[in-house]
Image 1 (spheres, rainbow, N blue to C red):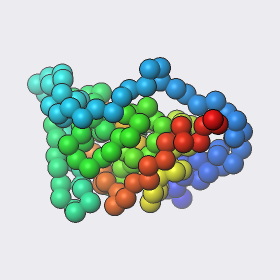
Image 2: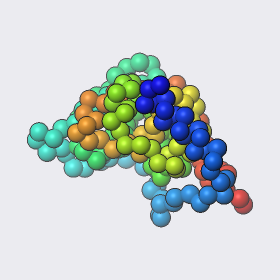
Image 3: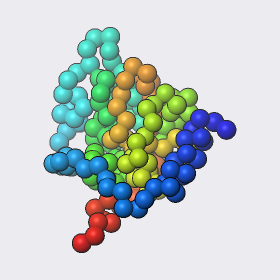
Length: 165
Ligand code: FES
C-alpha cells in the first residue's frame, strides 16, 4: 500500500471515530474572498534570488500554467486568476480550492493535512488519494516543481451551510 493510500485509509478511520459535535477551527475574522489581481496575491513579496519556486497548474482543459513564487505562498493565492473558486477565502471551510497533486512522491513530501482539511476534503468532488485543498498548501523548497491538476468540477459546500440556525 502506498503512503498516499495509507493516508487515505487513516483519514477514513479518523473520520469514523470522530465525534460529529467536534468544534471546528475558525479564523477570526475569516479572510474575505478577494477579487484583486494575482499580482497582489501571493506575490506581494517577490521571491529572493535563488529562492524562486515553480508550481504548475493544469486546468480543466489540460492547459498548463506555471508560476514562479516564493516560499510560503499558498496555492489558492497563486491560482487567483485560474478557475479556482476559493469560496471561503482560504479559511478551510469549503472544498472549492480542491487540487490533485500529480506526482504521488511530491504528495508524500507535503505536510499531513489536519483534521479540518480532511473534513473538507471529504466533501470534495472527485476526491483522490493525492487530493489537497489549495489554500492549505504552502510552497517550500521541498515542493519546488509541484504540479497540480484542477478537478473538472468543485462542490461548493461550506461548513457554515451545516451550522445550526
Ligand atoms: Fe475554502 Fe480552501 S478556499 S477550503
